[in-house]
Structures are given as C-alpha cells and as structure tokens.
Amino acid sequence: MIQVLKAMIVREIQEHKVAFVYAPFFVSFILCFVIASVYFGGTSIQTDQFNFSTEYYDEEIRQAMQSVSSVSRIDIVRTGLLVLGFPILLTVGFGLLAYSLSTFADERKDRSLIFWRSLPVSDLTTVLSKVFVVTLIVPLMVLPYIILLQLVAMTSASIFFATNDIVSFSWLWGSYIITDWFRIIFSLWAQALWSLPLFLWLMLAGTFAARPIAGAIVPPVILIVLEGVIFKTNLVLEFIENRIGFWSRSDSFPKEYQELRVVDISDILLLFSTQAFWIGILASVILVAGIVYVRSSNSDHAID
Image (cartoon, rainbow, N blue to C red):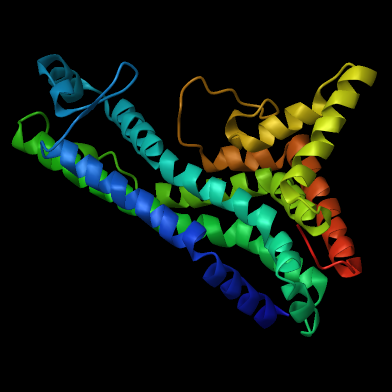
C-alpha cells in the first residue's frame, strides 16, 4: 500500500504543478526581485499603509538599530521574515482550496473515474493520497521557497546596511536562527491539519455535486442560517472562520498574541492539547468516510 500511495502522490504533484510548484516559485521569484531591487536602490514601495524603501533608514532608525537588544533584534528579524512569506503562503493556500474542490470533480467531469476504478486501488487509498498531499507534501514543498526568500532578503538587507554604515553585515545574520526552518514546517503541518476539515469538505462537494462550487457553499450557508434562526448561535460560522485563519490566532487557542510572531514548538504541542483541534480531526475522519462512500457508490460519472 505504501508504494501505491507514493505513486499516487507523485501523480497528484505532476498533475498539479501549476498550483504547487510553478505558482509559489513565480511568487517567490517576484518577491526576491523586488526585495533586491529596493535594497540596491532600484525601486521603492511607498503607500499610506506600507513603506518599503531605503529612505526609511534615517539617522534615528540607525541609532535605534544599533542600540536594540539581541532579544528584540531576533523578534524583529523573525517578524519581518514572517511577513515576507505571507504572499507565498496565500498563493499555496488558494491553490490547495482549488485543488480540493476540483480533484474529485475533475474525474467525474472527464470520466476518468471509470479508468481509475479499473485499477487495483481502493477508494480509501485514493482519498488518503490526496489527504497526504494537502497535509504533508505541499507544506514541505513550500519550505524551499520560503527559505530562498529569507536568504535573499537577509543578504540584500545586510549588504545595504554594511555599505551605508547603518549596522554591520552580521547584524541580521546574528539574529537569523536556522532552526526556525523546523518551526516553519511544523507550523505549516499544524496549519494543514487545522484547516483539513475545510479541504475535505471541498473534496466531498466535488464527489456529489453537479456544480461543486454551489455544492460547497450552499449547505454551510443553510446550516448557518438555520442555526441562527433555531438556536440563536453561530457555531458553524465560527468554526469555518477559525479554520480559514491561522491556528495560533483562532478563538479556541489558549494563548493570545497581540503581535505578529513566529510560533514556538510548544505552541504546536499546545494546539494538539485543545478540544477544538481534535474536533477538527474527528470531523476530518467523518468527511474522509463520506468521500470514500460517495465516490465508491457514485454511478453517475458526469458533471456539469
């Protein structure tokens, strides 16, 4: 079964290179180019809400950077690198949503379900291969792009700081902790598990709905409305909102962070101890069973 799963995972990645390989690479390449251009004086980005320019580093900022403590410097570097990676994460996140909605719908639309049914592969194995892609493989594939972006940003900024006598070349690198790479990947895996019920619901919609987008949206909307009218609560809406957002900033997470920050491994362990996390896992198991049942009993292979 392991070899079959491996082969199916490779097939999934090959068939969805645009979403999982090319798109994040393109975004990371653009970000690297923009960052290098700014620090080497080629351009600047200045709006009412955002200022990314070398003109920002005046004498006051230079003195503040030179006098900042090592702990604060690490926090600043971590936060800056975290913000830089958001566009890549958003790109991959939208790619995962599109993949989840289309992966079972496409095999009904082009009738390839008939072909896959002819192979000695169970419906459960097929579904699990897609779950592994969403929860394990894609987050791991994103990591190199984030690391590349961080290295380009660190190098470009360090050269600028050193050549303009703001701080030494090693000022940033002394606050760059390579073990954060592990924190990033574990955090991404935790995020994938946290959001897994949403991905699986989209997959389920693709297995039964003639129009998958409507099938994914209409039932939750009906549940939200009925819950509000009958019980005067909004648990379904809150569940969806929390699963869309970052797990460390959800309402159910025991810690509350006022600032944007990189999570600690202890935070991930804390997530695993929460009731909300395991409710999501239970919901995911039920949804996997639903997908397997609907796909195995689906006699109408067509889709609009």
